[in-house]
Image (tube, rainbow, N blue to C red):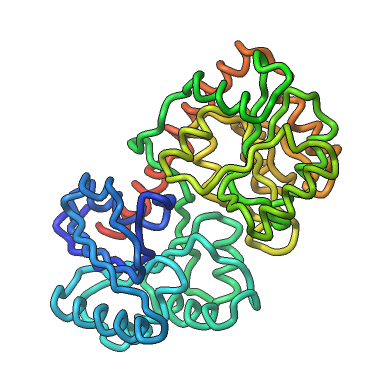
Length: 381
């Protein structure tokens, strides 16, 4: 591997609130000794953890309506001219808009395009057009799920199949340990009738129809009173908050739910670590949802959570192969409740044993570097 390489990395802006998944390529390369010039369009505070990566220089172009697009294009162009990189690494379809000129100034550098959000034809036509143009001219294309990669190759008529690196946390990412005191606080806030044996179910996001939240709430009505559901990113007064609160109230479950504000990423991991079950449900409305590859999966697993996910082929195979939890019909509250109950009915000892086993899988076979080592080894050879 050529660790003396220089990489111009175009991606999303970073902060302590958001997951680091879109920056993981830059972080991995920097840890290997590669110099990375990271450019992003946004108005966020630089994340505190970026100081751990001295090989990354990070520059954010202020986002101010339409003028920011022209500013970003100019900054990317002048940084490219000044740096003369060995590789230009473009992360996400939104960035392709600013670098459509790159294939026309081909020199010795190699183009890498990486997407963690490939959907399907017709979802976002403008970005799809830009992404297709750029991906067909890239030297390497990386996708985060093999079935998505297959569709992407066919849809865009790529010269070769995209490489696959799953959206995942690396083994070196620090995760908070389970905090029993915090867990008890959560149970008490929800008004659990028997806080000695609570079962905390985290949805990992807002109450939304495309995360099957109404079905999850209805499933709670079929579970014992010590089961608590937790939503995050809930802002009082918003339509999502009002809809969730109204639904919970209508089925008499308001006291068995927590509607938490948006949490910083490390706070979110602390919450996950304190819970028992992670919900990962999507509707069958397209390639992106049918072949799930969300960052929440790796976050749940690194925190030791058993999951309840949709019974779609990709995730069902992963769950069965690694014994990660259960699958359910995402449209059936009864099926969801059954999946939750199969996990929740386990003894404390068995739940703790499962946590250790799942964490080990996330550290090893399902870690970011498990696939990144091979893929980047080929690209930088």
